[in-house]
Length: 66
Image (cartoon, rainbow, N blue to C red):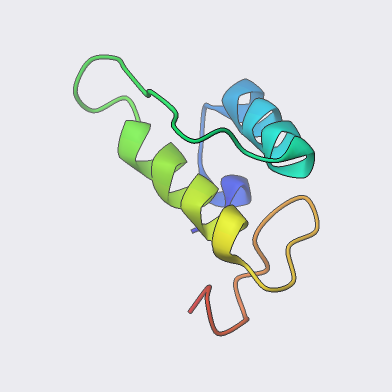
């Protein structure tokens, strides 16, 4: 999953992309009511961190993304 695919969390996506460029922290806490997209944001962030060719977002095509 990519941040491009996550709907309604553009600000959070921008902040996490900036954090990945600076060097991510050892932990992040995502909180909120059920069904707001915490899992989708976490999946997109994990994809970004593990992507072999990330450039602002996960590529969606490399070995780690698939």
